Amino acid sequence: MKKDHILFLTHYFPPEVNAPASRTYEHAREWVREVEVTVVTNVPNHPDGKVFPGYKNRLIQKEVIDGINVVRLWTFVTPNEGFLLRSLNYVVYMLAAIIYVLISGIRFEAIIATTPQFFCALAGKIIARLTRKPFILELRDLWPESIIAVGALENKTIIRLLNHIELGLYHSADRIISVTKSFKDNLVSRGVEPGKIDIIFNGVSPENFTNGREIKDESIREFMSEGFLVGYIGTIGMAHSIKTIIEAAERLKDRPIKFVIVGSGAEREKLEKLIKEKALLNVRIFPLQAKPEIASIIKRLDVFCVHLKNDPLFKTVIPSKIFEGMIMKKPILIGVNGEARTIIENANGGVYFEPENPLDLAEKVCHYFSCEDERKLHGENGFRFVLEKFNRKVLAAEYLKIIKNLIPESPLPETGLKNIKVKKAVLDIKK
Image (cartoon, rainbow, N blue to C red; front, side, top):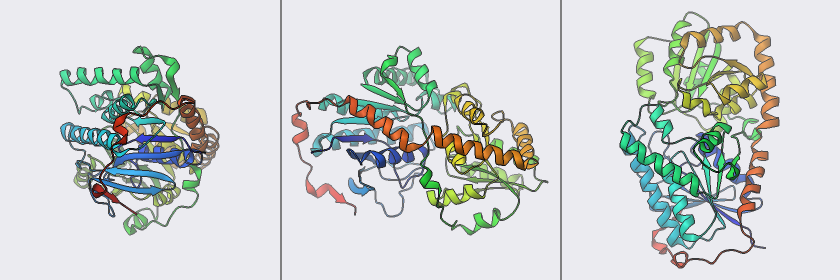
């Protein structure tokens, strides 16, 4: 019996290691047990805007990863250093995805497109409309609100236009999958039908963190060889205000406490310069590592820190990194108000500090430094809580059930566009 086929549009996919790449991959890895999945994505280049080793920025590249069909399209590769350049990257992907799907002859029963880059969602809407297939919009962030919150967009005319397109996408989707309750509440308050919005939280695959790989970077191993270790792992962008962590480190420079920052992003060079100017020896920024090595780094930490800017919008956000810290039995220093804080407090798995308040962060670090029993208690509590509530395998099954309920029993007629074949000459199959 032929399996149903799900088409998934996303900007990010492994070997990229950010939250959207992990979410899509870990869901699709479970789904392929029951359905066929094709992911249409970019050549891997996030977060530095450089093509990953082993890949080339060609017109079309194909590979299979753990049973998932992956199609990588030519990408306008650019660092995340400005709204216009990044927007061009998003628009190029939108056009490439639409053209590829319509002329490739690929057949599918439902299409999912993920935000916050809503040009990706717009591509999903257009393809769904032309092929008459169900359209599922995965809402991982409120966009353009998130770029407005960090000051990356101020033009009111463009903001109005993007808000109009955004709301149109929400209304036109057959189903919306939100990663937080706050996102759903936001959409409902703006007139979107609540009955078509489901919540599938981010989560974690425990098996990804059971066998970490030895840390290859000798400088990381050396820095983490002694002292009380506070770690931040993830994107170093405008929304994350990592300057707060550096300023907290400055206040504690005479204590046996070190701050380990592992990641990449638009703010990294500026922050490395700040550390050098302050002559701080107790805080270092290291390049983003592969997933197995990240697990080993987290294992060595005493405390896991998660932080976002102090903006009302970020009260709606649940950074997926909290689940990675919890599954490794690390107490969480949570500098994010709203839903993320509620999760940590409900789990009794960490301590809240006020976002962008380095004094409060420094005080909470000192609290954990002197309370080993509390660190262990919070780590164990968080571990049990995330296994029960945020296991990716369970969440993936719930997600797939929603998708299957949307697929009609009798497929709708195919459009003529889908019978046009791509010339073999443009296909570069990556094995």
